[in-house]
Length: 213
Image 1 (spheres, rainbow, N blue to C red):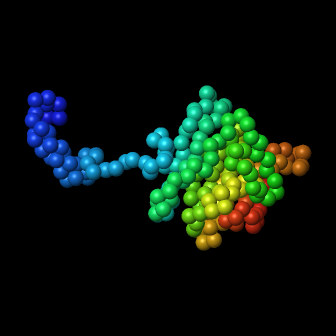
Image 2: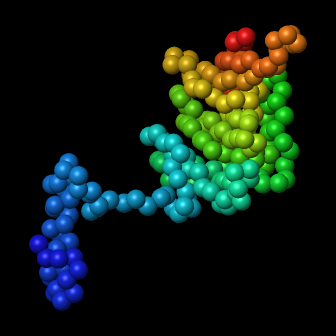
Image 3: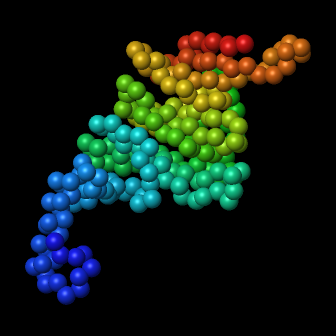
């Protein structure tokens, strides 16, 4: 095989060389050779070139793109969230996190609808199990609390869950959300916090709470 760096090779030699490389990559992939021929790594049209795939299934792909890096560990990145519907070949930007403006999340006893402009940080975006119409977006704006947002793509609705320590997963049969938060003990002799596990429906309704005190 001709050398890749050979400067005096003819055009036909160069073409032959490329074809030979593709064959070698195909035949030797299992031997540690990285296959690069005929691979299209381009993002869907409309998705920023710097975006990273966060999650996908047969119908949907979700991307996170860092628009602006934080100055230090105390300042959040400005991040945008993008959705690509594969069969419809459609792209939509769901939100861009706010840096300074917007209301700070306040947790109530139940989930509540919030504006996407109030979301200060996003580090994760997952497709909700059993549904291609909902996402779970999470962010940690203060290096302490993890806020979780259930996004209904059909309604374009952002639901802030009543928890502060993130989503642990989903029940295997029902698809219920399993999340956690914390509370402070009332007993002054047993000062400190304890974990509370939340079971929520796929529309954010609290089904059950389990104190781990």
